[in-house]
Amino acid sequence: MASDATVLTVPGPEGDREVRVSSPSRLVFPRIGFTKLDLARYLVAVGEAFVAANGGRPVSLQRFPDGVDGEFFFSKNPPKGAPPWSRSVVVTYPSARRHPQLVIDEPATAVWAVQMNTVVFHPWPSRAELSDNPDQLRIDLDPQPGTTFDDAVPAAVALRAVLAEAHLEAFVKTSGNRGLHVYAPIEPAHEFLDVRHAVIAAARELERRMPDRVTTSWWKEERGQRVFADFNQANRDRTIAGAYSPRALPHAPVSTPLTWEELETTDPTSLTVLTVPERLVSVGDPWADMHARPGSIATLLGWWERDLADGLGELPFPPDYPKMPGEPPRVQPSRARRPAEED
Image (cartoon, rainbow, N blue to C red; front, side):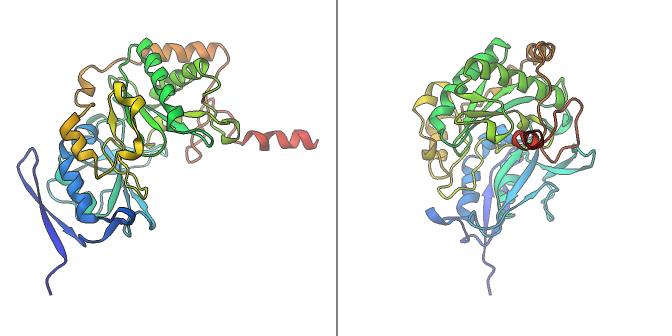
């Protein structure tokens, strides 16, 4: 009996690669009838832009063996059976544990990851060769219940102005869901904690300018109907979906780079695995020259020190992190108040 598999020819910098895709007719996005082979072909179509945005970085793979309607898991170690032309890099985690992660250097590696049932790609903000020092400052603008993508747009525009005042050039993409991701290329001169503090400084400045529309409150009960500037995505081993990565939602959206000029007229639900390849052909890649002019976070670190002097200290870390110096108690505010109220 013949094997149910297809071999794709994938162009790349070292020439064509032949990548086997098993179970090609398995539905990954059942609502739109999009198969595993369709997803592999999507990665071929956007391969050059995908690698430009996510390549050369440690990457975590979000894998869905039964499609996006089924269970998923994250692979941080490279899956077994990685092709000989792929590579990995050993990285350090908040626990000080170290182990390898896959690095995508060419489209064929991304297609092989699809063969291993990957749907969402989560690249680190640092390069494989200097994984402790990010070369991207990232801020996730996450609309809270009662707000929408349209509320994230003015926040992103205002954040662009904040970063410009800090001498950083901002780039924007859809999250692939309701929010926006704002990036700024930076010199890899600081480790993760410094970059986190730079992100907090920028987020606090944005909050000052839009207090009724933006919040840096970590606790959901304090956010209200505002856009949350998620500073904790700047931590070591905290990642967001990469540019041109699909998201695991029924209509198969894609986290898509935009120009600032088109941001206010974009419908993020229209940017999917079905439409983004043609968009790349007609519009091009808005992030093609992102790292041509990396900036310094020195101004933002100055703002961080200013805020410390004004009594604004460290903010909570993710719950899986070890207790960090200067961190406030990791307890929900309403729970922290309860003993005093009961007394």
